[in-house]
Each structure stands twice: as C-alpha cells, then as structure tokens.
Length: 259
Image (cartoon, rainbow, N blue to C red; front, side, top):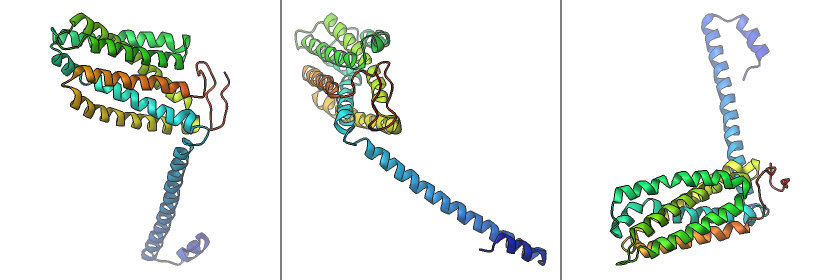
C-alpha cells in the first residue's frame, strides 16, 4: 500500500484517469482493513461467548447454580407441558362433562396464581415459594389422579384439583423466571438464562412423547407428572446462594452478594 504522503505527491502530477485509479486503490485498502478488523471482532465475540459459557460450569457455579437450575427447569417443563398442552385430551379421556366450560376454568386459574406469586416472592422468599409451589403442585396432581380413576371420576374433584394445579404451577413459573436471573452473575446472566431455557425446552419436548405414550392412561400420566414436580421441588434446596430477595446481585463469578 502507498503511504498517504506519497499518494498526495503522486496525485499532483497525475491526470484524471490516474487519479481515479489511485482512488480505487485507496478504497480497496480501506475495505481490506475493515474486513480484517471485522474478522478480528468476530473472533473476539466467539471467544468471549465460549468463555462466558465455560464460566457457567466454573467450580463455584457448576453444582451450586447451573446444574441444579438445569435439572429444575427440565423437570418443571416436563411436568408442566405434559399436562397443560394435553389437558383437553385428558378431560376427554376421563369423560368429563361440560368440557369447554371446565377448560375455561382451568385457563382462568392463571390469574390467582399470578396474584399469589406477586405477594409471596418478597414476603416469603424465592426458594421457599418455589419449593412450596412445586410440592403442592405435585400433591394436587395426585388428587387429580385420584378423582380421574376409571368408574370413580368426580367432575368437581377433577376441576378443583386441576385448577389448583394450574394456579400453583403459575406461581412456580413466576418464581423460577425471577430466581434464574438473580442466581447467575451479571457477566454470564444472559447466557445462563438462555442455557436453562434451552434445557427446559428439551424437557417440554420429552413431555410430548411421554404424554403421547401415556394418554390412554390419564392416571399414570398424572402420576408421572407429579413425580417430575417433586424432583423439581427437591433440587432448589441444593442451591447454595441462600435467599436472594432484596439481596445484592453478584457481578462476576466468585463475588458474594450482600444480604
């Protein structure tokens, strides 16, 4: 490449055609420089992403945060999607009366769940609310299964237990979304949330296969989902961060939040 000083000196004695050629060379040099800088920037971004992902499995996060959250997300998504996306088919399988009216009640059960979670998140705390809502969700599914037995179906029992499950599951989801963002340090928070969400999607996909296999036996499907919620309820107890309500969030791996 020709230096800027030489270009000026050469251009003084050039005709218009030669100047255009010189200008074209300048543009090509500028494009090559920008392309090289862009390649370095992409390499830096890729390296930064890999480092951030690796930090999620740092010894201080691996078993204290990342893996427990992944298991909880998988179990919650499995138990939740196995029921919520198949609830109309379950109602049909157990020959429930007034199908659409009861499905409406099931959908409306989200509202009290949201209101309850708003109150409990700071009053009771994230972990206690999460464990409690997941445990009671599992219990409500056992009651749901009891009232769904062949030749012993109770419409009132099924509707009340399924709506209770929907409300409690909504509480669990709200707490889970809040706690996941708070438990990861700032430097890896977005990547951590993305990893947990992706793990949950795998659980949701697995739930569709399990539900398809067990739909002819609604009681068994409900009990499997209940077990999934119980697993999700036990794992948060392994989180080693303590209660994050009104606590300072960590900015990097190894930082200690102030309670």
